[in-house]
Length: 50
Image 1: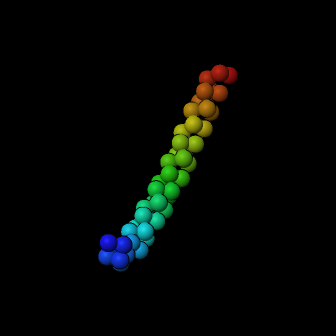
Image 2 (image 1 turned 90 degrees about the vertical axis):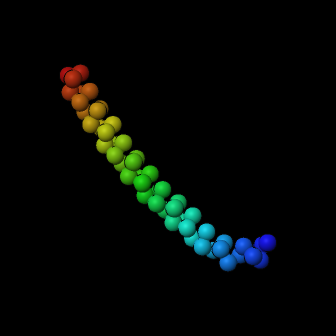
Image 3 (image 1 turned 45 degrees about the horizontal axis):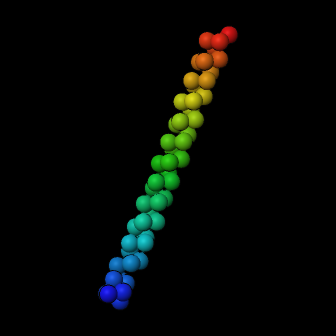
């Protein structure tokens, strides 16, 4: 079974690595957009406090 599955294993690993990279890219993009949103909200909040 291990020998039978082995040819597929590298492809699976490469696919999952690519998926992890994609998730990291979208995660970083989400974090950046979240930081932007928070900074916009904070600046609006500070303006309204003044």
